[in-house]
Length: 510
Image 1 (cartoon, rainbow, N blue to C red):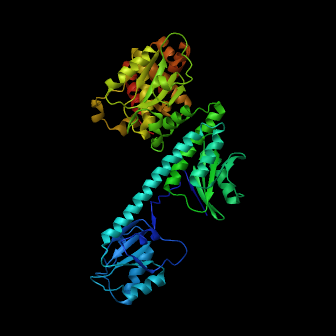
Image 2: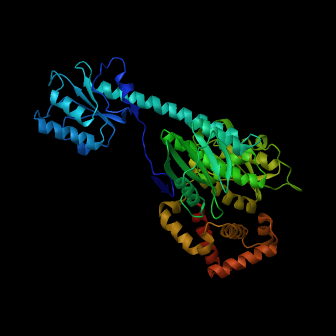
Image 3: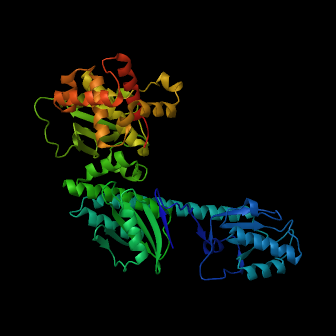
C-alpha cells in the first residue's frame, strides 16, 4: 500500500507518550487493571477529564480519558455502549478514579474493557486527575525538548556534512545516522547509500519512476517487507529528478520529517553545486536560506554562522563600485561580518544580523563603501522570511546604484499599504506584467532589466552598466517588453504602472 503527495506526505502525527511512562510516574499510584491486548504499547496524546455519558463527540483520539463515573449508567448495555464508543473514537487508555462516587472500579466496566481491548487504569482516591494530566504534560514537554535538541543537532551535522571532501556522500551518511535508518539516493542508477539497502520491490521501483518524472509528485510512502519506506524527490523540474529513499521498521515522526526536509533541500543544492564545481559551505547554506524558505529549520545554526544573530536577520546585497575589477573574495566573512555570503551575478548577497534601527546599519554600509562595495540592506525578517528579504535587498540595490549611495530598507510604513489590498495588488501586478510575471529565467531577466532601466530613468548606458550588459542588449530587451506588454515606455504613466507592478510582485512571499 503506497501514498503519493505533491507537497508532502500529509501526515500530522503529534507528539505522544507511551502508557508505561505515565504508569511508572512516582506519586501517582496508578494501577493497570486491563493491560493492552497486544505487544504494541498504547501512546497518549493528552489526558482529558469527562463525566459525560457519551464523551465521544469531544474526543480526537489517543487520549487518556479520566472519569470518576459520576453519570455512568450501571446497566451492562450502557457500559458496553460507553466502552464501544471510546474504542471507536480511538481513546488509548481509560482511567477510572475511585471515591467519592465509586469505592471500586465497576466489574462490568473491567469486563467490557477487557473484552474490547481498551486498557484500563485505576486512579486512587488520593491522586487528583489534574496530577495525572500534569504528568502527561510534563512527559510531552520532555519529549518536545528532546526533539528540539535532536533537530538542532541533526541540522548542525547536515550543515557540517557539506564541508566534507564528498559532501553528498557525507550528507547521506549523516541523515542515516540522525534518523537511524538506511538511506539511498537514486537517479538513473544508485548514486550513493548508507547502511545496507534491501532489494527494492516492484511497487517502490514504480514510485521512484513517478517521482523522477518532471512535474511528478514530490514524495511517497510505502511498506517494503518489515520497513516503512519514505521517498522524496530531489532537484527541480524540468530535468529528471533524483529520489531519496529511506526506510526503517518504525514510522517516521514529525521531527524526522523536519530533518528529512532540510536534507532534501541541502542535497538538491549539493547536486546542483556539484555540476557547478562549487561545494562551498557558506555559499551553499546562504542559497538554502535565501532560495528555499527553510530558515526556521536552520535557526539553531544561525547563531554560529552569523555573529550577533537574533530572532530577526537582514539580507545584504552588494555590487563592486570601486576602481578596476572586484578583488577575489577567498574569505568574505571578515569583510561582510557573516559566514553566510554567496557570490551572485553582479555582486554578492549575505545574511547578516539585525542591529535594530537603520542608523545602526548605515555606518557598516559606509565602511563597505570605503572598501569599494556599494550595498543595500533589507528590512528585518524572521529566518523563514529571508527569501522575501533577499528580493527586497535586490530591488533596493538597483535604487542604490542609481543614487550612488548605500541604502537600508525604509522603516517608515508605506501609507499606500494601509489602503491597498496586497493580494489584489499582486494580482493586478501579475496581470500588468503578463509573461514577465512568470517564474522562469527569461522572465526574471526581463524584470531585472526593466527595473534597472526604470531606476535609471531610461538611461541606456547607466542601466547597461548596472546590469553588466551591452547597451544594445538593454535596448533589445526593453523593445521586447514593449512588444510583449503592448506598452509605450516613453509614456510616464506606463512607466509608473510597471514600476508599481514590479514592486508589488517582488513583495510577494514564497
